[in-house]
Amino acid sequence: MPGELGTLPRLRFPIFGPPRSRQRVTLPNPLPDDSWAVDERSLTLFVDALKEPPAERAWYELRREAERIALVPASTG
Image: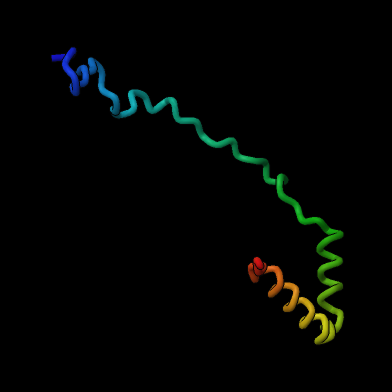
């Protein structure tokens, strides 16, 4: 009975059910073709950097050490 301890009242409507209408789904608004463009200045700087000789070995060792410091948890104590 609905008033008894440990029982739940029966609902008169389903909690879960199939969607009633497919018209509620909205379609994405496509962006125009020119919404994405290459930054010409950045591309030029990148290409120019590729033409330069590789960095010295000391730079790579410094970078590796900095990455190790950043990734290793600090000691507490």
